[in-house]
Amino acid sequence: MRRALDEARKAAESGEVPVGAVVLDASGEIIGTGHNDRERSADPTGHAEIIAMREAAASLGSWRLAGCTLVVTLEPCTMCAGAAVQARLDRVVYGAADPKAGAVGSLWDVVRDRRLNHRPEVIAEVLADECAAPLIEFFTRRRVG
Image (cartoon, rainbow, N blue to C red; front, side, top):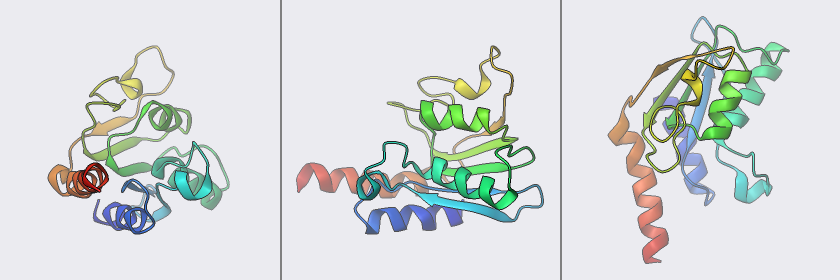
């Protein structure tokens, strides 16, 4: 999670919402990293999780990320949760819960929907306060400034 927090800081430094993600292979090696990049890239799919999963898939030479773990500082949205299911990730680990848009248990629970063909394990709220702090600061500055 600390490496994902480093990615979140990179997002904040470039004016993006500070969310960071990493993908670990089965041995625990980082094979993908990402941070939010929607503003710079003008890409609506430029979420940290998507970027990290793309990099991991390129590293493995396969879209199937079986055996891998996604670690992200903020609970994934519906798009990212759906991508985690489609990528066949074994596990999703997230930091701060997102009661307004979270799709891994808060608002929706896409990854554990029994109607889907794959359901990753979920480990929630790892270093939650530490992961929430940059987001709170970012949005506080936005409202004030």
